[in-house]
Length: 145
Length: 145
DNA sequence: ATGAAATTGCAAGTTACTTGCAATAAGAAA
DNA sequence: TTTCTTATTGCAAGTAACTTGCAATTTCAT
Ligand SMILES: [Mn+2]
Ligand SMILES: [Mn+2]
Ligand SMILES: [Zn+2]
Ligand SMILES: [Zn+2]
Figure 1: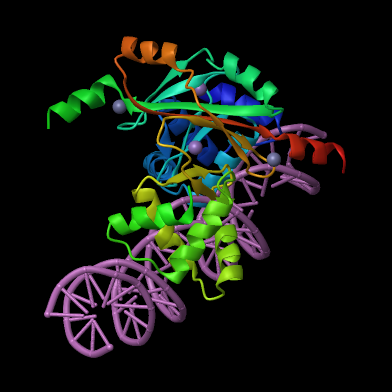
Figure 2 (figure 1 turned 45 degrees about the vertical axis):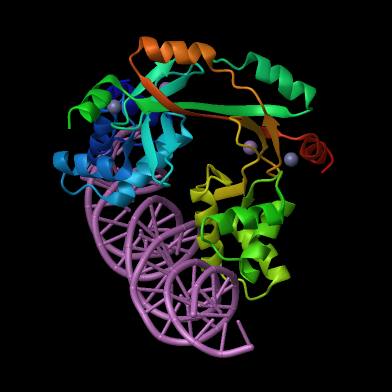
């Protein structure tokens, strides 16, 4: 997903293109394989445009989320991590606990669970499968202190 | 899991039995099929012992979590929901978005994903599978407004 | 160029939780 | 039962992560 595609999707929904918005989106585009915190988004945005403001970052994230352009994970410590949604097709992720890098899992292993839900009269509407661990690089760094 | 078993596990770890602790645990025991908020835990505890304090609730939850006696889900709105852990054996849950009721899924459908992780040199350490939807009762209430 | 509508920065507010500390309670040891 | 160490508690203040109101600024269709 590149910057102009995103700006066009926003435009199509009545949102205007601003310097701050472009910078925030550029940070997300540059990190589209990694879950990053708002703090990181803000500080990287400030590198490109020092006057970028925290409220602006939050308000832009809110818009992206509303348009389903954002993938969001709430970490165990309660911090929220974000990245651009990588595809419209239903999928899951491998998530590195070291660096936040993600890899796509493009199938969903839930067939028998859907059957189970039916048996329990449970109307299944959503599911979340997240696999955590360490990517090759982070595993290597752990062993080489 | 009943109150005395819990108190004994705490005692075995150097924690004392107090009125407040007993009440908080009793609330959790009485809701051991349901994810509930801290607010709920506090207000129900206050019904049984009006002087129960918020800090005390949080500090007791912290202890239960450290001893792996607690299951915790962070909801989309950022609020944290708790229930007693229901078994030591690895398992997952169906979680009702209406009332927080949970049902156990006692198998784990992740075999092919573990294989996939190996291929990607990803050291898989944890996974989370949560299925959300509506239980029979909540579904019925939705249709009868 | 104009003007309506979106956006922004700032400061103040909120919520969910955490922490320091002095007072109290538990329960093992004497 | 009394003593005494240690855990626990309540309170109040603090923190972190957002959220909101509002006036000033910017965007961009006309
Ligand atoms: Mn994705
Ligand atoms: Mn369980
Ligand atoms: Zn990594
Ligand atoms: Zn329900």
